[in-house]
Length: 305
Image (spheres, one colour):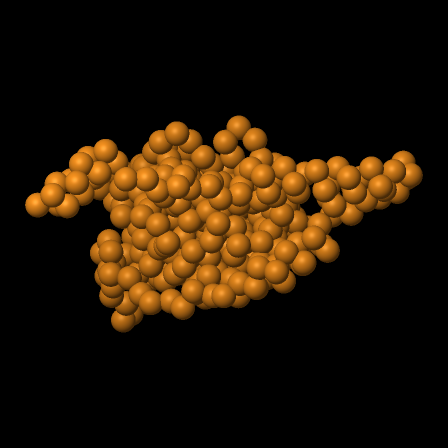
């Protein structure tokens, strides 16, 4: 199976971010704002969460694996990466995952035996750890970690995807083992790696965790230099109509107004909100242009010359 990007954090300078473009793409994919407070907004996207964190020194755009999976499913993943690329940035976390249709129990047992205490994925060896349970079939399985909760440049986990899907979602899938590596900023991942994570994954997972297939080039930070992607045209009026018509919160507000028999009052409140927003965001009136005293003095010297 192919390698996927399963988590992506991108950080910007606070005075230069692609917030509008990114939120346009997410809302076109059905995102809804869940909370917005303390300098952060949380958006529900599919079954995942997108977090926009705003601090004095940086802004961070964080998309979980479920968000990225939803964007891939609805054909908006490359649109999302294109929007992220609109301002200078740094990829501060990238998870690359690979699923193998094989029972995880013997794979985890083999890794535990091979690396009982430490495993080296980059320059420094990290501690290994296992969190296991007994499955319904009597076999011991779960998750095996490299650098669990550490600040390592590259950390990893190999886990029983079949068991996880059953425990978390109650869904039965075929026996599946997931290999997942987390890359931090100083490794040098890029949005190109988020688009095509295979080189990044295999250059660090093989041969320590799993042997890579033949014919793949080695990974280097910044490989390929970038690529061209046609940015999508998002029909904002259509997006607005869709967001209003599908807003569960707006529907609940209207239902409450109907129960209280004060629909007219509700209309007035919404109109007041719209007017206040328009006032706050209207373009600032530019002052009429006037020549400076120095310019006037210079013009007089030109006339008398």
